[in-house]
Image (cartoon, rainbow, N blue to C red):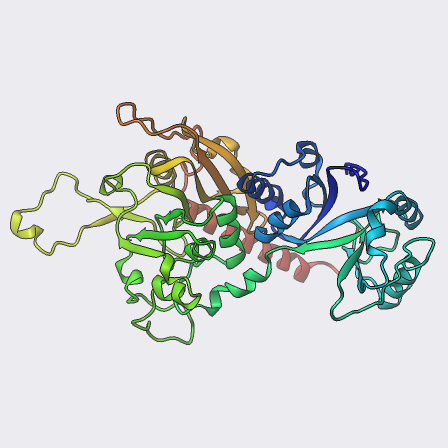
Length: 474
């Protein structure tokens, strides 16, 4: 772990400690970088390169507390941001380090300032008796000569003492690997995860994206006020909710007429049929966000010609169907040579054919190239069989720059990767450039086949192990 830069009262920069939530660890740096770009904040690249993604603590040098609060205001992976006053491998090291930051701390030693000290540990549950002992050691004239009163309910200042026990077993005994102390500056935006829980909405489906990931996708796409965002595989619109929450105008398309019109089979086990008022628009209205709703179209995402004006969207954010819970379909004919008579075209319902994942992702990049504004972002999920995955599986486009590639592990063998790309060259009608894939991940089998083959093998392995245990000699 890189040691933080020391600070003093006269320095332009100060060191802040980011305390991350203990999940979606592979997404932490990508979200942080995207938010920093959105707010125009320069991050110390060396700290990001050397950071261990499994570690929930990151030291950042920022020019102001305002920047720290900006990052926290949007992040769903940051628990808290703390102005770092001292750190060390042991308590003695920490106490000695705190003495070097006296100038920084003096303004908070006033008798009129109430305070509260929070003692916490990563990967270790600390006994209450131990926490009290730590606080008593800290609040002495030799370490932190605070003059103000302790107020546990409504303090003016909150301070954190954090012990990092690293990756060692929670049941293991031993001292922390590192200890931090500092002044609380801000909490992350994690409360919004509970506010936007999918289960609280009237309109949900089998594949509705959970709130934490939807909010994360909006952050990676740098969604902001007055943007126009589209989800080409909108489903029940779970991805659009956080975009509207960030005051972007939202719209989407989906080929599933029955779902969009609340005529499909309900997803809730105790619901026999869908209510007529179930819709994406009403979901947004429940959050007071209906004014950001543009429209939802029953349409085929592969038909790019239905959009007349190129370069109109600020962001494209989506989770295409993988063919497991919901099949991927597009308009087409199994017999391409057949044709309809004029009489047959009246009230004709187009035939649908399978829409392969490889084609979906290449079409997405082509759609992004043509319809994203310059600098706009495309964020989408890419499901993989982990043993066969290579970076060459990700489609690429000469006018779309890969910004991040983060993995969400679903089980030992299957995961999905959240891909974020940014349009770096304007669209040219006279020089159309197409997306390509160097190595097709789905060439030999669909993801559905991969998924159920993995499940079948896991079941066989479990039965074999059970038989061995049953028939083992005494």
